[in-house]
Image 1 (cartoon, helix red, strand yellow):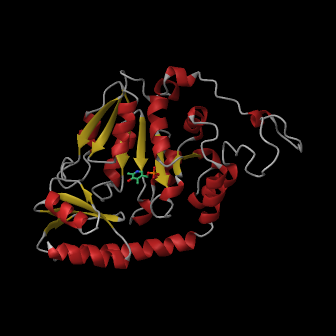
Image 2: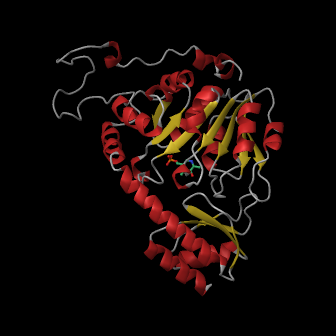
Image 3: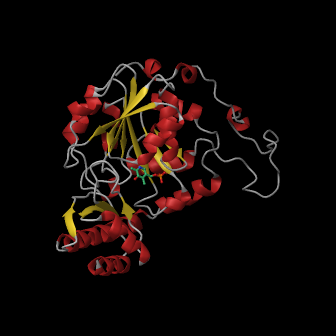
Length: 343
Ligand SMILES: *Cc1c(COP(=O)(O)O)cnc(C)c1O
């Protein structure tokens, strides 16, 4: 890996972060007249902890990482945008990423005027590390990988991913939004062996908290310093910090949900494969299934008219004729299956 100083944009490397009023104070105090807050309407009158240490302590314990290796964002979308802004000089640096994959990587690159190089997965959605690495040049700062991948659903081969992590001297981001549904382990356990690795996870999927907007980035303490410098000081509000903290206490309930969704996923996959309409059911390690049909646009439109909304991926590279179908409750899946059988 290159030195972090060579990877981080020069202006970010020297950036002096905003200093919150309360940053300067440590120890005991009972009168807070430093931040122009209203003294009434507690606890909502006070600015929240900019580093969310209480919540992070809980996440650190759950994930087996250090508090200092965690950044929390307004969804994973915030760390994705921060990664682009920390490492990529507009109009100069570039990003390499697998395709098809999650749309936000490219949007964030575009917003920041950073070249985004898409490297197609193989036809069966497997990863070819050498092909990905061949797109790298001296201005490539970041590689985005997503596993289990969206919209294809499959886990990427661990050895191929390792080849990318070891074979690239810049930052490798592994987006694990769907890891709770997967049959393989997270890359979090390898964080300490790979200083160039950033792992993304989220509370939006398995935890059932998409509305709350809380995403996680995990990386070395050195990388985290830059996240903390660049992020908005109070990016996670108090309500979110408290609510997510409370929800984490109910991890057993999340596990039950995952179990139910995996059973429903198996049921759907089995039903799909016996439907004449569906030409191919792709293997999945996520809470959705990609299927190929003869006429994706027509099937999508028919389902929509019946009030069943799926994701039409027909125009996505390698996904011609494909619909991405999220696993719902047993009742929702009944409705989906009934409607599909009418086509
Ligand atoms: C859903 C999803 C996310 C989560 O985004 P949030 O902003 O945390 O809701 C991240 N990455 C991928 C690939 C996703 O599909």
